[in-house]
Length: 361
Image 1 (tube, rainbow, N blue to C red):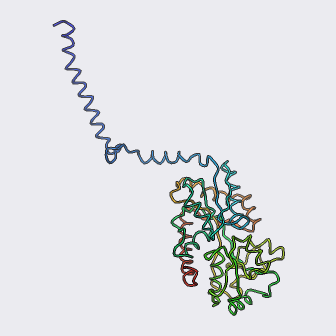
Image 2 (cartoon, rainbow, N blue to C red):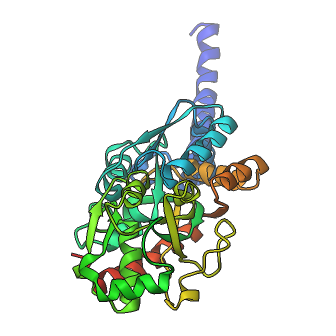
């Protein structure tokens, strides 16, 4: 055997031993880390902290393109005006355009279905939510096209009190006299609403139930919202409209409408001379108006949270507050679980009212 071969023969056992030691250490190391790095079926699992970091980073640049903000009522109504005020503030804050898209119809259901059922749940389609397109919609029908479970609730922005308005030349001097007339002549009472389960419908039904009038004998005049409804009443084409302080103020100031009562615990600072319904002998009324925003189910929570935080920040902005005051509104923000709990409780009450008065079919 040559000298080289002799040297190789001596080195070979040492090399094999070293290789065995290295592979053994690697196997033990893999076994000791299996619980943390392998999941069911041998798949590599990512630690929870890494998953959270990845999710957060995925939405860190949201929004990075225009957002569609769907208003399920006609332009010029309360939901629309608040939505435009909100998007003006948030688009400036986030540096991305937020485009208002009005999709009225079916008491708010048309636009709500588009935003929650047809659009992607990627945060780039938002519903300008409202009491009529959420709790009242679900309460008003046993086969409602949308349920609360279809919403990912983000934030309530404002609340407003309903007011009962009639034409400026209507014969009733106050709400008490008008209530007596409605109880005696329900078949002559016509009132406007966006649909059988609209906001005005619930307000009228609750009022008639409280005074002992027959709701079923009255007649609804269907409209697409306050901007269509109020001129009908002012022109004598319907007897009554129930809309918010914000929505009624223009025609009231113009002398076209007369406010008979405000449905609120206290008088409105915007209608200080108008007595509440309770002051005029009709107690126990609680229907109220609100608007906010929600997303389709499955929308990433990081995106929903960004809207929650954005609205909360806006509500502290003097410029935003001043713009709402010009609409005769004040911020009344609820976010997260508080908002969800609020709508669940409200839906329970409205379902009972709808059942008792015959709204729910």
